[in-house]
Length: 193
Image (cartoon, rainbow, N blue to C red; front, side):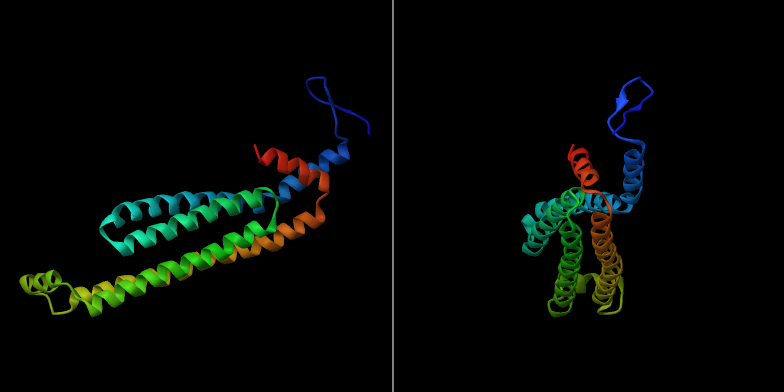
C-alpha cells in the first residue's frame, strides 16, 4: 500500500482508494448518525420531564409513576443512541420500540386523567363554574378535549418518531453489508470518543 503525502509532510497510511472509501462511508453514515442525535435530544427532554414529574409526583402518585416511566424511556433513548453509534441495528429497534412504549404511557395517562375528570369531578371545579357563571360541566369538557388533543398529537409525533427509527434499522443493516469492516471498526473507535 503506497503512502500518500499529506500537507504536513507525513505519509498517510491510507491509499487514495481507501481514503475515497472512508469519505463515501462517512457520507452514507450521516442519516444513520442523525438518529443518534435525535435520540440524544429525546433522551435529555424526556429525562428532564421525568425528573420534574417525579419531583412534583411527591404530591401525586400518578405523577410519580409517570415520571418513573419517563426516566426509563429517557434511559432507553441513551442506550439506543450508544448502540447506533456502535453500528448495532438493535439500537434503532430499541429506539423504535421505546417510542411505541412512550405512546402507550402518554395515552394511558391521558385516558386515566379523562376518566378521573368524568368519574370524580372536583368540588372546586363545580364551585368555580357556578361562581363564574359557566355552564355546568364546561371544565370537564375542556379537560376531555385537551387530553384528546394530547393523545392525537402523541400518536402523530411519537408515531412518526418510531417510524423514523424503524427506517434506520434497514439503513443501518444495508450500511453494514456495503461498508468494508475495517471502516466500520475505525468509525466505532472514533465515535466512542
